[in-house]
Amino acid sequence: MQMGIPRMAGILYGIYILISRPRYDDKLGVWLLYASVSWDGNKYQYHQLTNLGKSFDTEEEALAFGFVAARAWIDAHKSD
Image (cartoon, rainbow, N blue to C red):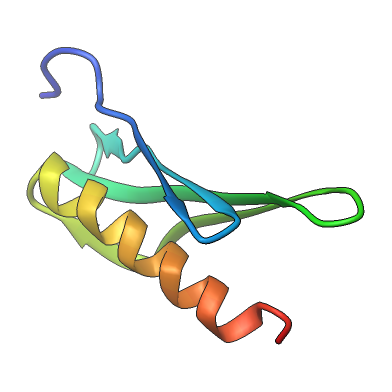
């Protein structure tokens, strides 16, 4: 059973804003990844990452992995 309000954290990674806010699945009893990447080139852009086939025992693990996944997505998709 989830207690309290889930955490949310944001960081800057170059020109990108990364937000990680894991979600608890009561049915499965695990924490799931939910992260987003946003940036402003010529127009505002946004990409959302959810679950990715992973679950976590703690909120802290899911929160940290949200940033890892977001940075990996940026590194694989950004223009040089």
